[in-house]
Image (cartoon, rainbow over the protein chains, first blue to last red):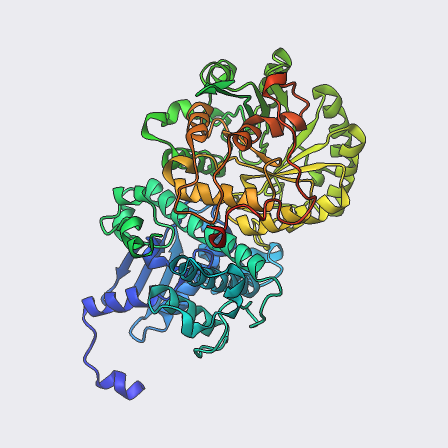
Length: 271
Length: 347
């Protein structure tokens, strides 16, 4: 690998900015299950001639949970540090009630516990795992509800038998497969869809689907609320946000030129 | 009272505040950030015609409050749920003296709830007893994310909290409102975790726990707990204004709540002065679940009446005119309350 880099022509400024963007797009808001780049959380990128990089992040409120804030900022720093051409990487979180603390911790690579001391008893792995499971639950519900809407005769209790191969290809299925891959769940067409993070099938299928639905509603609702608050807090930030189809509503057309009304998307399924 | 199309609704605004975030009361940058954050909520979720200038948002005073709620806002009774935030504001955020005096002057219209903090130990317990007598407390508002010296939060199931809850039981303070919503702490745990409500609801079955903001942003965790605990209710503070910006999301929240916890345990609130009640009441009475969300049954007029006032009136012993009363729904104690409500399969 090292030889390859030496032989490769130096990255232009544009290419490096592209690298930065790509690295940051791997960083997810764990709760909203979306890249921070799509959410508009990247405030600025400053690139020095010698490979010095400074990235500033912003959040929808100054009171966003510090554990989530730290998680995203440290993930961003880790992702940027893997770029071979960087000399120094500074990630800073702006306008947060714990900005000073978090930024000092990031600069020192102190970790979550090192940054917050006795207040942080655990690292953030469990929190991350919780939201990975929720993201999987929501992705499965989106697929199954779409199936139920397209097959109005189908009995809800039968969704426990639905396997990956029964699902229509597309965005929802791809998202589900990504989530399953994250959790080491089987990806073959015969694998049942409605399973928990350990692959276990529920006893009460209808109840499991209802619970999954409330998880999906939570995630979609939070995502749109957070995006809206960011736009209120930082006018113009809508330019940085990518459209989110899940949970989109007609009001989103006001700031999202790519908005497609739900009715035109679901027309073929109207009963 | 609000009347439309021949139907009258008794309105209880179950979560209001009389706050002071004017510069002279702000202690530090966090106090500034807190009110800025509230103002962003207000601007983001309100119809344009209902957006206040920042200046009038910092403080309303009693006169303005009475007008917004009772003259313009159709409200019959309202309950103060103060956030103390003593680390951010010199005299606290919610104004105890002013709000309690206003409630004392209008006992038919206002109920004053106070707050406590288990980190105040024995002294706080004594204070709670004094406050209960001074204010005639029926309820308290607890803010587990409150800062206190080096501590950035506490849990309802901490041992000291149990002692305070036991005192509440003894003093007849039966309505425990807990802020579980867009918040900040405790740091280490998921700051929105409602698991501590689960523990205390099981151990204090004679108290009623109202989870304000119905657990948003973790609606599903809240629903699951509330389903198992018959003494857990949902407060709609901050959920209500989604009725304007995100009506489909609002419909889904309501649909889920009706399914999991039923129509007798959901309470309307404007969260004044985050929002004023008038437009929320009007919008809610006109609201219906969109037809294509066929997994939910339509909301009935009776359900709207309960949510808008009758449920909270029952909790606070507010007298409701006979002709506006409704019987409780015949629902199970635990488990989904309305499992037969519309689902995709039923359509």
